[in-house]
Image 1 (cartoon, rainbow, N blue to C red):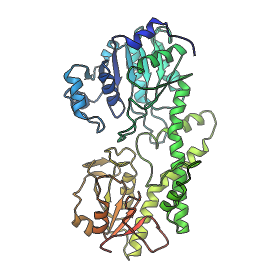
Image 2: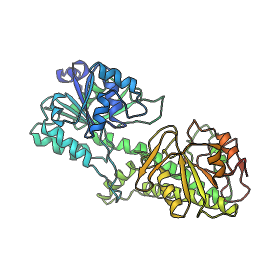
Image 3: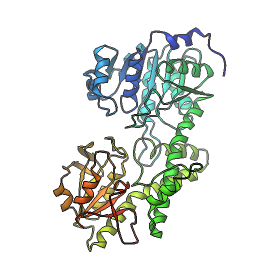
Image 4: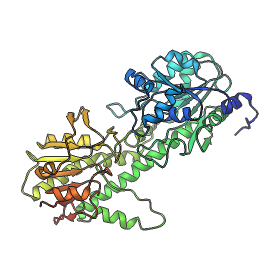
Length: 449
């Protein structure tokens, strides 16, 4: 890369008095705004949701990983303010775009939020500004879509303004790896753009990883999540194989994991959830379809992972059948609906699909999740979490563990339940294995059995 160390513009990003704008105050944007503010840089947060704006300005965090006490300290000092007024974007020397990138109903990329944010930035773009896209997307988005909008200003990228892609690496619930200490990849549209982005982000990120282009940075993020999706798909398929062979998949995984080299431990589960792994690989698949290239690993892993909710429902059916019961008119109590333990995020959670499938089969479904007091999804409708009591467990025909929250007393749950299906191996060490060949490692005889 070119040596830009004496560039006065870049030195301003490295140490000057700046204001940063963060578009999108969700799971990515709000923690980013907080850590930037804590580094002594003034931050303006932008969001189209007025309730989010009002909450941030009141020092109230809607993100579990960001305590309100941290947010309040910043708002009280005047370091962080939020607004829905995009006309204030020209007040910012640096602008980060951290908006959602969902999939459409046809599983194609929906970059409408990125496009809207880029259009807002372009409307007030001025010389000297640095724009960084953080939203996960397909390779080429930064150059083809965002730059396409910003170039309408007549300003020249790499000379008049700077444009980079730096993918977020947020892991909700992770107390060890945070925004600050997780290495951050950054790639610019030009080498000077990369240098500008690295200079600024180094003020609040411990280690920057500059790469040669925005496309490298974009593809690196997709690779990270595709790696996980494919390996989870592999272990989920192994779980299906183990079920057919009458072998305990959890025992298989733990045995394989004793190898000190050449093996990385992944575990099966009820399906993929969250804002990244179920979504991001489809961005790459879509991009490659436009180039007449088929991403076979991604498509197969997606197919397997998408089949797991139905497999879990089959385990519930087998467990009930072994007791002489049908799914229809049985009471199923689900423990945990968040997509992973100790968080409140239900985006793409397999629990939503499983509830839908069980109710289609005629089951009476109730759920308990201390992190998710209510659900309001097109698959589940509006429903409330019920209290976890011995009576609730004892009356259930089957208890289904979908999220292994640390606060769950698994020994107590096993003792008070008649029958369980454990999709997370959360009851390991407490459970009596079912005697039937099918469902080995998933079906658990409870203390009331």
